[in-house]
Each structure stands twice: as structure tokens, then as C-alpha cells.
Image (cartoon, rainbow over the protein chains, first blue to last red):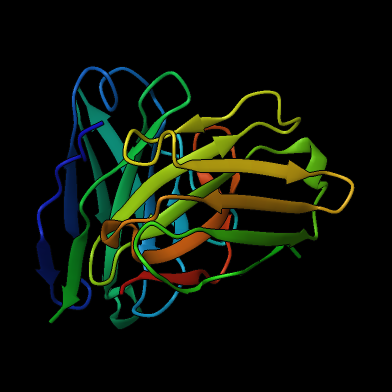
Length: 110
Length: 117
């Protein structure tokens, strides 16, 4: 199973929007609507932010949104806040009870 | 509230074995599948293994197949990971996570496994 491709870094100023991409193949991202996104602050456990491409768990601000087109999924963070600075990972179901993660994107709030 | 608490990490020599445990509370453990996900120091997340709610089957990443074994004890709300033939590249923080229909909705704090001579 090959890792999904994410840009290593992204940045934006407070109040701006930033989008992080996650590219896979037709065997994972493109084949299932089971992409999820995780936020991880340094030294902490990951936190689920988006599941099933577009859904937000209870308690996650609506500033976080997800979408997918073909083999690429995206996470958009609108109205950037200082506390959004973290590492973000995408994940996709890859069939046959296997999952795959992206390499992670470090989001910097300028 | 959901709590997942891992234990059992430590330092082990290459070729050695280690058994991790995850104590679950705050939800009906026997009704949910569970995963182990790991993170090497300074690196990204890697899915390791999954076990359905009833332990009927077990699924593994190619990198650990044949060396790691996931199991669960629904009477004790506990998940385990038996790791054999450990290699330096298995060095990582190991997280216990709750399955949420194709995603991972709750994570433990992780336990560090270091494989070194």
C-alpha cells in the first residue's frame, strides 16, 4: 500500500483560507467516499476533523470542510486561527480492510 | 467519555518481542472494530492492523504481516498487539484507535516502542 500524497507544507494568514490536497489512486481515494482528515498538534494524539469526505464530527468548527474530485481529496480551513497551526493527515479506505494515510502537511499560520 | 489507554511500550532489541495493550472505556467496546496506527519519530501516520468487533478476522499492513498479531478480549474491554521479530523500522509511537465506519474517531495517547541494540 503506497502512502497518499500531500504537500509537506501550507500556510496562510489569520482570517484567510487554505486548502490542503491529498492525492491517491482509483484503488483508494478515487474508489471510495471514505476519506478522512486528522489534525495533530506536536506531542499530541491525532484528532478526527473530517470523515466520509465531507462530514464533520460533533465539536469540529464549520471552518473545516472537505471535498473530493477523482483521485484527489481536499481539506479547506477557512478563517484561519492561530490554533489551527498543526500537522494534518488524510486517510482513505483502500479496500479489503486496509487503510492508507498521507505523508502529512504542516500548516503554518503566519 | 471515550478513553483509550495504551501500555506496554519500551526498549527492545532487534529480533525481540513486545506486547502492547489498550484499555478501553466510555463506550460499548464489544460493538466496535479497533485499529493500531503507528508514527515513527518525526514521521507520518501508518495504519498497522484492524480487528472487527467480534475478533472474527484480522487485517494487517504488509510491513507487519506475519510478525504482528492483533487480538481483543471483549470481556475485559482490552485490545492487544503482539509484536515479534521486531526491527529498527518498527520504532514508533503506537496508537490504539476506535473504528468509526472507515475512519478513526478516538485515539489513545500512544505508547513508544524503541527497537535498538
